[in-house]
Image (cartoon, rainbow, N blue to C red; front, side):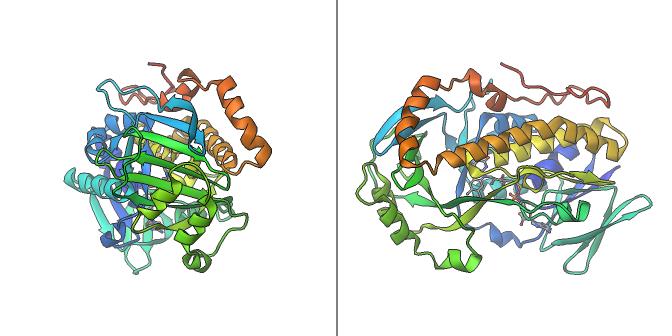
Length: 401
Ligand SMILES: Cc1cc2nc3c(=O)[nH]c(=O)nc-3n(C[C@H](O)[C@H](O)[C@H](O)COP(=O)(O)OP(=O)(O)OC[C@H]3O[C@@H](n4cnc5c(N)ncnc54)[C@H](O)[C@@H]3O)c2cc1C
C-alpha cells in the first residue's frame, strides 16, 4: 500500500488524509504543535463549495452539526444595508454555508480522521525532507524521522515544505488589514440569525452574524499600512483601538465590542498572488502552503478542502506520483489564483477612501451581483467517481446545478 506523510494537521492535512484513505493510500499526519494548541479563537465561514467537497468524504454533516446555517449576507454602511446576496445554492440535502469556530472545525476533522484510521502525531515539526530510492524521508525538529512514498505539505502560510520544494519561493504578501473580533453575549440585536452583515464603517470594516443562541460573532479589519511584528501586535490595546475607530457611528459596532468579554488578539493579513512551484519529485504543497487567500475571500478553508479531495483523486488514478502532482496542479491552479485575486479585491474594498465609500452602494446596486455571477465559486463540485486522466485537463469542472 502507498504510504503518504502529511506535514500539518490544520484543515488540509486531516482532510487530505481522509481523501487518501478513500483512495486506498495510507496516511499519517505530523502536526508541529501539541493538541492543546487548538484553544479558543476566531471563526470562519465554510461556503457551499467547500461543504460539497467535504460531502465527497461524508464530512459535511460533521461541520453542519458544529456550525450554524449562514445562507446569506448583507452589505451596508453605518446602520443601513444596501445589498443582499446568497452564499451559493444549498447542497441537495439542504446544507447551506456554515459558520463554525476554527477550534471546533480543527478538532472535529482531526478526531474524525483518527476514527477512520489515520494516525496523527503531535509535536512533530517538519524540518527537512530527503529523497530516497523508493520515496522520501522526513526529519522533524525532535530529531525523529519518518519514511513514506510521498510527502504532502499541508503546513500553512509559513510552509516549510514550500521552501524545501523551492528555496526561492516568495514569502506571503502582506495585505494592509488587521483582524480582530470576538463573541458578544447578552445583546438583543434586530438581526436575523445566520445572516452575515458586512459593514463599511467610516474608519473600519466589520462584520457580524447572530448565532441561533443569540450570541453575536463578529470581526473587524482595521487598516494598517505596515506589517506589525508579533510584539507590536501583542501591545495593541484592541478594545480601546476599536472603540476609537467606531465611536460616533451608526450601527452596532460599539455594542458588539462592549458585550465581548475577550477580544481575539489581532493578527496581520496575508495572501499569495502566486507560488510558482507546487511540487518537486515526491513532495507537493496544498492549502494555504500553496495559495493562501486573504480572509476577505471567505474561501481559504474551502480551497484547502477542495485541494485535498482533488489530490486524493489524482493519486488514486495516476500511478506515477510526480505525474499525479502535475495533474493536481493543472486541476487547481487557475481556480485558486482566481479566488486569491477576488480576495485581494474584497480586501481592498475594505479600505475605501471617502469618495469610493459614497459610490460603492451605487456600484453594488447597479452591478446587482447575482447568484449566477458567483456560480464559478460556490457552484464548484468535485465528482469523486469521475476518473482523472493524464491528458484530460478538464477532469473536473464547475457544474451549474
Ligand atoms: C482571520 C482569518 C479569517 C479567515 N476566515 C476564513 C473564512 O471565513 N472562510 C474560509 O474558508 N477561510 C478563512 N480563513 C482561511 C483559513 O483559515 C485557511 O485558509 C485554512 O486554515 C487553510 O488550511 P491549511 O490546512 O492549509 O492551513 P492551516 O489551517 O494553517 O494548518 C496548517 C497546520 O500546519 C501546522 N504546521 C506548520 N508548520 C509545520 C511544520 N513545519 N511541520 C508540521 N506542521 C506544521 C500548523 O501548526 C497548522 O496546524 C481565514 C483565515 C484567517 C487568518
